[in-house]
Image (cartoon, rainbow, N blue to C red):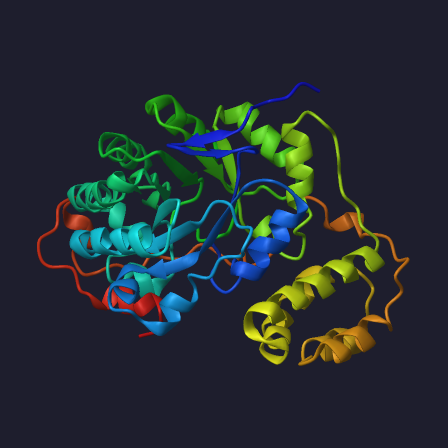
Length: 378
């Protein structure tokens, strides 16, 4: 198998393997990013931070800006709806935190965000999208920091925005655009439309990254071959499987590798994950934070409901080690889980939007600042 690519260039940032870890709330913190980076090369993006929280010095937002000592590319995804606030937030990231790459989120489909016109609802307002991107690119330019954006196909099949978004991203100087091949109405249900990724790639000259239904390394290669995209964004596929990045690195290097760790090897990764969380948060808080990952790691293994339940309540390394010792390390990886969706799926649903949102592609009034509060629980 021949090497498919030599990497991905985003402005001055070069990524050896054209794979991006999608920002996932409560998941892609410094510990998880480090864990994934230990498995293989790629661009590992910090979980999403609100621009208002950053500009106002919110403690929770600032705590998320934690990077490992060896984290070579500091990559952060921002969420914002006001051009001025977005620009100020990007300036803070570049000037005060040494960030090397900024991604803007226009793909979030959750109601508490879209009902205020944020996330995947925002690209419908084309002029506003351009203003936000222009503010971000202008703020990052003096520092040589590339700005990218992530979006979805549109609000629903009757209100598609991805081709316009690609044109706007290119015109405002974005270094790349990532497209999740689903509409906001689909949430995470059904199959991702890879054809839309290919259409976007044909429509713009900046790099296009494809996102959606990459469960195995072979899926990434298939997406690149089908769409011509310049790289892939991996989200739910790596939940409980950080070694997927090892497989991806091998696949893009032309080597066929499918990591099938036995339960003992999975347990070692679990222990490492908890340890990294403990280094960041302290042992007890780190173990509590680790609990959410247990079901993902053990998915498909015959581990028993009792052990699973007790693992979901650990608060110390000792307790974790004792429970893991009850499992059979020689159990083979459940091949039935290969190529199977992981994490949330749900079903299609009507997108909650501000009143009259779809009447025009232009803004008719001021954006409600509560949209940014919504995503941080404010």
